[in-house]
Length: 579
Ligand code: ADP
Image 1 (cartoon, rainbow, N blue to C red):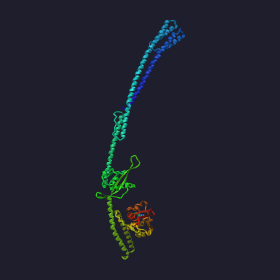
Image 2 (cartoon, helix red, strand yellow):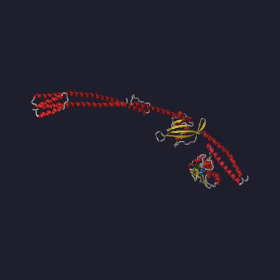
Image 3 (cartoon, rainbow, N blue to C red):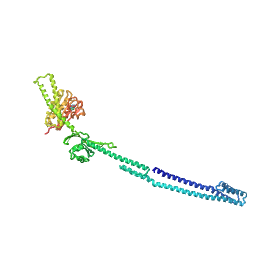
Image 4 (cartoon, helix red, strand yellow):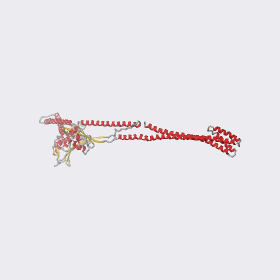
């Protein structure tokens, strides 16, 4: 039975019984009061009237007052006839009294009136006795019925008291326990109320919910495992080495290629601290240098390619250390969860680069000889002893000479560049006279300066110590800087070449008042093949990058300061020679 119906029935029954009890009580009380009233009104009054009439009769002398008293009570009695036979007795009394009134001395008549009065009193006494018996029975019935209804009420209340609290509280308790189990993720918990009531429905609903949660949990774990497997397969199938680390630098995964190039085994690495693995592995040590560097290098920092000898061949890899940050569910702040070290195999590009460098080196080398012989032939042609050339021919020879010089410069730059790229720069650093370098560079640019009517203003202090430099390469760099200053200056300008010596350092500066360099390109101009966009002058974009390599290879530095639109100033810093 449903709890609602049970409560309804129990409390309803109790309520009905209370109503019934009240009704029975009030009915019997009414009945009793009616019975008493009956006795009072009907019989008691008659007895009272009769007594008053007897007193009036027994008064001394049959006076007018006693007659009036008798008549008054007789009148009342005439209106209080309730018992069968009482009317005739009252009528006889009235007749006999009237006779007695006319003949007061008649004692027989007086005795008859007395007898009439006692008969009426007897009749009413008997009636009182009868009615008392009826009232007693009513009281007994009332007691019985009230006792029965009360007992029934008590029984119902008792049954409710014993059963109802347990009936409601026990399932609630069991349900609370089960909910706690579910909250603790024990989704296999079920409740069993073998009752066909609201708790039965609640148990069914609860069990369905628990089953669904269980299904959801298992399906989610399965899904997660599937996703994990998929990602693991994906990582192990990546052709490039990948190493994953957690926030505390434990190795989370290393794909097959990473294991292969490091010569490690999965069981010796996974879950281990990467520093511990690095102790016995040079490659891992070089890979994690940035992770432990004081300056925290950020993601995607470019590094020099790493050369690794594996599988009987040399391979080149570019390293990237990517920090992984996630925003956990429900949070706003990003959280660092680890790093991924990616090694991109750039061996095919490196091979192509080698091939390109070799090709350029061969071509430039092969071009150098014919260009030199063209220059030699031009010198012979300019010699008047060989023969006279007219003005037009002279001009033509001049432009052939310019082109040959330009070609020679380009092939020279390309050759230098191939040396730099292949890492074969041969440096002959030695104590060198500063003037030698400056004079060489200024003389090499004299003709070009004259062509644009540019004055080269050289300022070199007297009695300078020697500089520690590769004379040829440094002269080449200075020549290149002066050549740039001339090319990027306006006609009739001045180019300043100065040398300073201070605190064991030499500072060579070439300053021009040309167009200057836009600030965003100040660093880029030292990159290979880079030219400021919109540069109209001829050039390869190689001069400054080779200069930087040559100077840095000698332990020096080169930089530019430029006021865009007002000119540039290139500075080389080299060490002074000390004994
Ligand atoms: P190139 O001069 O052959 O183009 P460089 O490597 O010598 O190559 O120079 C790279 C670029 O830097 C040039 O293309 C030019 O845009 C810019 N540059 C170099 N020197 C100067 C200078 N003195 N004034 C203005 N721009 C310059």
